[in-house]
Structure formats: C-alpha cells, structure tokens
Length: 360
Image (cartoon, rainbow, N blue to C red; front, side):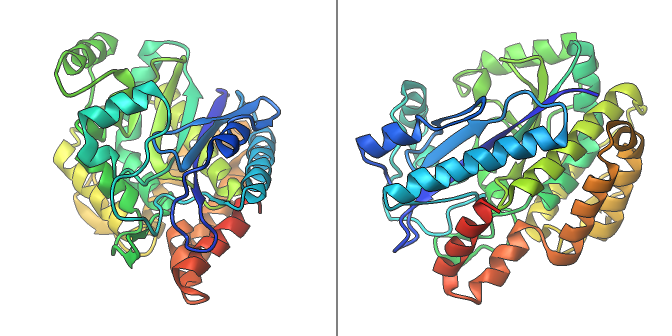
C-alpha cells in the first residue's frame, strides 16, 4: 500500500472571548518550536493559525500517534500563554477589521495581492498526501477521485459557524474557498501532458502567484511525489482525521489500480454536488454526480465503501474506516457535534468542547 501523510491546521483563540488571538513574539516563537517526533509546527496564512504535518506514514497507528502527540503539545503550549487551540474548519467568532497575516513573506505577498479575501480567511483544513509512483499514476488518481470528492466534503464538514451565526452550511469553509481564483474539483485530464500543459497555462495567468496558489480539491503536489487531497475541514478529533486519510488512501489506490472508464462527469454537476455536500454535511441528501439525483448520505457512503473495499482489505483498514464512517453517520461529524455543543454554552461552549476534543 502507498504511504501517506496528513497536514492539519489549527486556530489559536482567546479562551474568554472565543476570538482569534494574535500571539506575541515570545508565544509565536514557542509555538513554532513545537516538535512531536518527526512532526513540527509551521506558520499558516493567518497569525492566529498553526500548521503541522505528520511524517510519512504506512499505517493508521503511526498517523494517529503523530497527530495526538502534536495536538497535546500544541494545547499545552497554547495554554501556557493563556490561549486555547482548536481544530475547526472555521473560526466561529472573529473581530471586525482585517485578520493579522503571519510573518511570512509569501503570505504577505498573497495579502497584498488579494486583501479582500486573505483578510477574512479564517478557515482551516485537513489535507492528505498519498504517494504515487509517477505522474501517470497521479493522473489516474486525480480522475478517479473526482466523482467521490463531494461525499468527502460532506464527511469532513466541520465549519457551520461564521461571525457568530449559523451559516446554514455544514462546511462554510468549502463555500468560502469558492472566492479563490483556482478552486473546486479539478478537471478531467487525458494524461500527464494534458495536466502539465493546463497547469502551465494557469500559472501563466496574472491571478495565480505560484503553484501553491492552485486550490483544486485534489492536485499533484509540487513538492512531493504525492497526490494531495484538500477537501476536508480541520477535524475536531485526531481519530476522524486518520479515518478520512485511510479512506482517501484507499480511494487513490483503487483509482490507480482499478481505474474505471471516464463516465463523462459534468464539472457543473460536480460543482453542484460539492455545494450540496457543504450545505448538508451528513445531515441531508447528497447529489450523486453520476446520476444527477439526490440520494441519502448513507447511500453515498455505502457506495464509497464498496468502491474502496478491496483496498481497505489489503491495507487492513476496513474495520477501522467502516466503524468510523458508521459512527459519523449515526452520531454526527464535526459540524453536527458543533451544533449540538451550542446548547451547552453558546459559541463559547462550542469552543470549549472543541478544545476538549483536540486532545481526545
């Protein structure tokens, strides 16, 4: 089975107000010095965010141990500076005015270019990298992923609140990202040459600063021999991040080794299915982009599990992934858990519960 890695983004919040917190220089230095085995912290776009990446993993227990160790260190470091760390797809509360950009020149360049977007980019995601042998395998993976990316949005939805109100969406992060110049589900590509030709054309435009600015739901990494899947919100619990990553790895493996003929999926239906997934999460119907019909989330998750069943059997992950997805369908994903915690203390209760689940 392919190796994989997980990137997670976290918010730093003021525990009294729940607002995003800008760390002072000493706190920032301590946060950027966090080490958890081979994992280490790094800046994200906003100064109120911290990012981490696991080492290359082969098995579930490796990824889970890495995430839990880093999250515990992050929580301890933040608490020592009277901050709280949470893993949520969007900050539920925010101050008026522009967000503070992290002290990284690339991020400052992005902010100078599109301040109307970057100044409100209070969103955090969970990205999964899956190793590929070559660009041909990468294109098979990108094409095979397209049909399943909307249901992955629904499973990974964890951002219902924005500016102190319920947005009516399970994943507001997915909707917010639609403002960027290159986003949404990646096109179908005939092969590597087609991919890199199109990429060159996109990079030649005046609205993309570099390859990292290309925000497709899945793309070939420009730094590693991997396909990078970017659809999930940051997850409340480390175990949910790992379950999603295992399902995604199995989907990449299946797409490469058991490719299906291109079914003529319309980009417009994929876009609509993604919007519907962001709207409902796992608490409402999904649009099946293959048929154009609304179906239950249970049916879409069942179809996904059937598609990746052989790969999950081979990796030994079938029981873990099936149990995790069954639990999310029955008890709720991050979006539902956030909404349920609202009743026990309002939005500060949501923040408090998220902080507790960070280290679960």
